Amino acid sequence: MIKYDLIRSSRKTLALYVRPDGRVEVRAPLKVSKAYIDRFVEGKDAWIQKTQRRLAKAQDEKKTILLTSEEERKYKNQALLLLQGRCAEFAGIMGVAYGNIRVNKAKTRWGSCTAKGDINFTYRLLFVPQELIDYVVVHELAHLKEMNHSPRFWAVVQSVMPDYKERRKQLKEYHRRIELAD
Ligand SMILES: [Zn+2]
Image (spheres, rainbow, N blue to C red):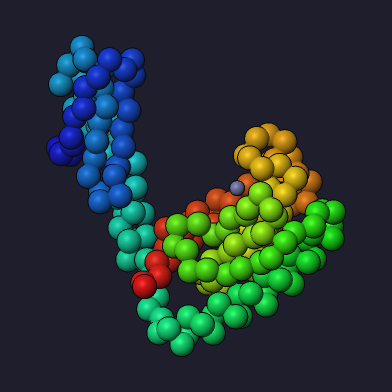
């Protein structure tokens, strides 16, 4: 029998989750019986085990990269050179003009841009594949046309990078796996 945490609410359907720590959580309507929920969870046994294995593996693979301040400075310069090149190339294709490019050590965002057209990137981008760096560059440059994440914004991204959804997904995966210690 699989152990699980049960959360009842006024929802209409049963839902099953495996949390990042591997614990199983079931969300259930108020009136569904415990026996019914037990059978439901047992029926999902294979999926639960597969998901728990996948999460455990991701946890093992998570890398923490420790850098000295000297290394950090080097990486920031390296990232700046790389990103200046990529921005120039894609801005030409997209017909946008940007302000200053800066590289910071942000941990939670790959990039951001200001209303003035300055773009910030994190040097963590050096640790992801080139095609994902390019996605971040195109994403930020697209904000110079659309300062939001509306369908119009995504249409701009897609016009330059038809496979952006796949790249975006991969980048999220990296976000989970790479952690830079201060
Ligand atoms: Zn954005």
